[in-house]
Length: 112
Image 1: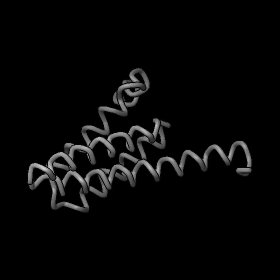
Image 2 (image 1 turned 180 degrees about the vertical axis):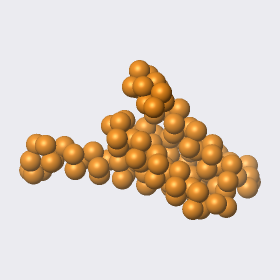
Image 3 (image 1 turned 120 degrees about the horizontal axis):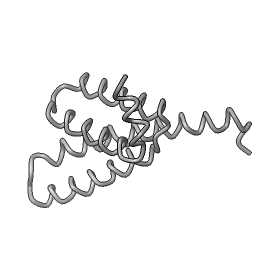
């Protein structure tokens, strides 16, 4: 429970750190797709419960795509793995955006 109190205190930096940690853990286990699914579902839950900005996930995904593109020109084997992580982040960001939109329309009414 102490983690959640710290998360409230440092609400601006925690989403960046959690996202970076999720990317590093997912990068450490490239063939464990079930583990990646669990990691990013937990990331979605954390971002949804604490109402962190989902655009952070999408910004990380764009950054990883740029890195993947740079590694492609260098004939690196890591570019494919980084592109897959970018896909996971984009998917998580879109799911969080949909959840955020649902919350806003639920409280305000239908989208006009």
